[in-house]
Image (tube, rainbow, N blue to C red; front, side):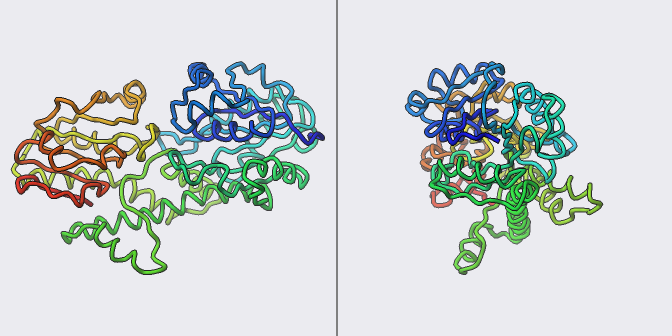
Length: 429
């Protein structure tokens, strides 16, 4: 274990999780940030963060050393791995990013170093999956020559309130001494607001249930939205009333995507099945949330039918990212709405001021409108993501975009207070 009180740290993966962490640690320690994306490293050196989490001025002032050269991982005391943990098309854990990161990192390990994983996993992955890979690549023994740790990430993209320096950080280590050192290191960036978990598997379990719990709660609200919608009611009106009770949990309905809530429950379900336990509640929540795209498509189609637009409607989707005011397109469920509407014969245009058009084409095979200037004559406008720029829309904006008799489908309840002309129909969940 490192004996010095000012360890040299390397952060592996400079995405939504790794970059803010590396920047924060670099205020207190010498930090190297490694990412295999050469373009990403070049952008960071030029003061550009495509995730929009870190301001250009902060990037220019930081002492963080970003690199795409793995050889620069040599001679560090603590390595922190923040690579993504997605799922396969069969919704099984895809540990390949962790495997590759561990194989690469293992080549540069030396005795007494600590390897901390922040990626969301099911209990046992750090010690039973990553540990042996590190051992094979390094020729060293975990728990004797180097040590493992786990500190679950809690980055919420786009959230300027719950930043890494303002939240409780959970840490765990292969030995009490490792856990104590990690407590000190992470505590340096958040005034000591650190919780030491009983062990690594406990910390892994705590992380994966955080997102599974949220997924289940949203699934309940989504199911209620389906029920009250059939009664001709808006779930948002129902929630306004229910939220007046002091202990009512305030969750919102809608599409559940992203790299955490829409993915992590499958990791927990996989772990449960390995233990011969069928995770009924967890997967029921996933099925409900995965089905929201189809429910929204059917609702939009039915409302178009009611105003006399039978087939081949021209539809404008506003928003493609998985949540508001961020450029992150990973696992966005807006694509379910787009594909569903197209299958029903409708033509769809998409606009999103936050998303990278190049990334939308490369990863989703979807082209974005450059802007909304000069576009119009749509049968329907769909508010899919509540970006700030859409919150300012007025009735006159819709008149420019829509045909005289048209539909506004407001998935996020953005425009509830707008008084639309009588010929424009309004639908929300």
